[in-house]
Structure formats: structure tokens, C-alpha cells
Length: 264
Image (cartoon, rainbow, N blue to C red):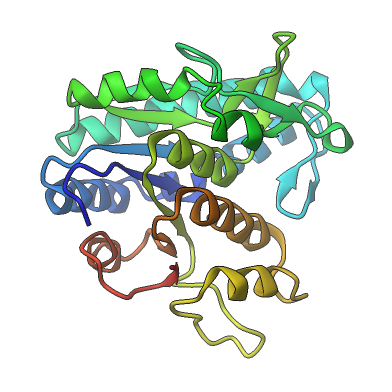
């Protein structure tokens, strides 16, 4: 593991319900990485759910991705790129990081493809990203060179300027690709579980794709595994999934330990 290889870490919005625990996690990560550049990507589904409910709007998900009609985008954008992002920035700064809040549209927009079945939902344009048709990575590299830790919400936009809701796990995988970085997806569970409820450890890419087809991998874990496989296959670097609630496990992973589910 190179000391200069960036790390992309994604935390779910559920972590924001435990700010003291999240502060401990970020402080532990900062210490473990010891100056190594890293990016923090976040979701915020719980806040989105709350805001939509307060506005009398119903919301549903398909394979872990939220259906987002155009009239939901002001609330979704405010919840993710506004409130949630700034709360996380303040916690990161308390942990001693030079944290800067941003979204997938800041500087140069990350290229997306629209998932019309879900509405104003974008997925990374993997072909464009692999062909380096994105200045978003250069923006991030400039920030990392200045020892700034970007804290990125998963709000992007399409070529026509329409704002888009992007699954945060997929956004993190895309950022790992443009930075040629390792990817760590933090969840509410220690690892992906098999059909019997047992933790799955190190797996190959082929085993990961086979796992993705299993019926017991559903919802948020389905898209999380999908994102991990995209990053692992395209970056050829270690991608891992474990719990944000256990900083010691996160630190062990960052130090090369066999913890959680790792795609090698």
C-alpha cells in the first residue's frame, strides 16, 4: 500500500445520527492515514426521508436507489448538498481535518448518465470516466495536494444542467476511479452476509459478481456491492465494506488488515 495512494471513504447518512461516534471515527481515520490523502463521500437518506415526509411527499427505492421525480430535487438537494454536507464538514473539522464541503457539480461536474426509470437519478458515466473525460478528478487532486479533505455529497447534474440525485456508493466508486484510489464503503454491518447470516471475508471479483446475483443481497447492500465491484474492476485496487460503528475495524482495513468484506 503506497503512502501516496488516495483513499475514498463513504459514510452513510445514518452515521450523522451519532455525531460523537462519527467524530471518533474521523479522528481515528486521520491518525491512521497519517497525512495520506483521502476523500470523504456521504449519503443522507434518513434526512431526505424526514424532509420529504414533512413536505407530504412519498418516496420509494428500487435496488437501494431512490426514485426521485423532478419536484423532489429541491428538497433532496437541500438535504444532501446543504444540511447533511455542512454538518459532516463541521464534524470533520472538529476531528482536525481541513475539510471542504462540495458536491459532484463543483469545479467540473462528474459525468453522469440518467436512469430514466428512477427520474432525476444519475449513474456515473463509466466509459467517460475511464477515458479520462472528466476534470472532476483534477479538481480533487488540487485540493488533496493542498492537504484539504473534500467532503462530497452525492448531488450531481446532467449535461443539460438538470440536478441529479446519485447513489452515494456509486458516487464514491466513481471518485475512486478518477483518483485511482482505494475505496472503503462504510455500512451499518461489519461485512456482507451470506444466506446464513455469516460474514463474507475476502473474495475475488468473479465471486463478487456471483454474489451480486444472489437473492439475499438486496436493497442498500446490493448497490453497495455493485459500487465496490465497479471500483475494484476498474481501479484494480482493494475495495472493502465494513461498519462505520467500529473505528478499530476501519483502521485495521486502512492498514491492510483482513477485515469486513474485501474485494481483491
